[in-house]
Amino acid sequence: MKKMYFTAILVALMLSLVIVSFCFANDGCKKLGVLAENIMTKRQAGADFTEMLDVAENTGSSEELKKLTKNLVIEAYDRSEYSTQEYKERAIRRFKNDVMVKCYKNQ
Image: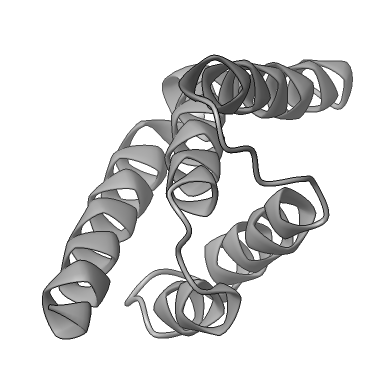
């Protein structure tokens, strides 16, 4: 069961990275928001921190994208994990929006 869960996290994160790397030049901040949303969704679902870092490190993406993904994972785990669905959704939305705002400010 745990292996299936980890595999699902890996696939979701890898798909996010592929989407982000493919579309980064055109609409990078929105795609970065999708990545942030996926990471925080996994965090709110109780995914293990070290497993998430391992997934970020072991993707076939560029070193820059690996570093960015690892930083997003660390930032997501600096925030609280909630027990109610309403608060989980709120945390996911806030994290995504915070990441997108930072991205747009730095363009």
